[in-house]
Structures are given as structure tokens and as C-alpha cells.
Image (tube, rainbow, N blue to C red; front, top):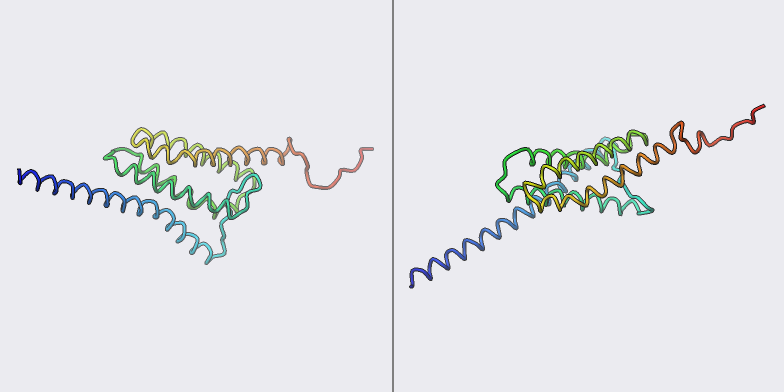
Length: 184
């Protein structure tokens, strides 16, 4: 009886250590994309590039920045959920690639015109759907952590393509801001 009590205590201590290690991995995985974004921001600002964030529906720019950083943290959490499962396959590579693209997106956004930005956002939306399709079966929690990003990238793709179509010929609402001379 004394032997089983010692084994029960040893097993309980092992479970506690495993839970602490999992919590530490969660903190590291969640912080890693945020740290990478900070490093990219530091090096981009050294060459004069500053990020532009997606802030729809009258949301202030800082709100778009907070939304972007929360999504990066969720992508890190999704990576943690994926690494907690002993999975093989390409799900990790897809998630790492999507995270890297999402870290870089605000820095090359100012370099694109509205049509190019709409196409990039559409590609990001499709890439997010493909990544969720690969990550979701491997770790369902990771797929759910990526769901808010799917909503935001879908909205940005829809708005980007709508604005590009509205201000591009032949659907343009206004061509150059100048009135046309009367035909005569």
C-alpha cells in the first residue's frame, strides 16, 4: 500500500510537470509570431517601410493593428495545438507559410494598387482556406483558432475586389474626378 501511494504521488507530479511544459510551449508558440512581426517591423522601418493594417467599416487604424496582432497570436496558438498532436504531413509547413505571409502582408500593402491588393487578399483568403483544410483534420482546435482569420481575410478580399471593380474601367463610378466635356 505504501508503494502504490508513492507511485500515485510520482505520477501526479509528472502530470503537473507535463501541464507546465504544455503551458510554456503555448506561451512560446503564441509569442513567436508576434516577436517575428516585431523584428520585421524593426528592419522594415530602418529602410523606410511602415505597415498598413486592414481596418474596415470605420475602425481606427490602431484597431486594425490590434486585430492583426491578435490574429498572429491565434496563428501561434494554432501551431501549438498542432504540435501537441503527434502529426505527420504538410499541415505544419502550410501553417508556417501562412503565418510568414501574414507577418509580411502589412509591409508590402502600401506598394500595391487597389486591384493588386484585392488579388493578394483573395490569394490570402484561399491560402487560409487551404491551410485550415490541412490543419483542421490534424488538430481540430488549431482549425478553430484559425477561423477568425478566415473571416477577416474573406472580408478584406471581398472589400478589396469590390473597391477595385468600382474604380476600374469599365465599371468605374468615377474616372478621374474631372467632369467630361459635353459631347457636341
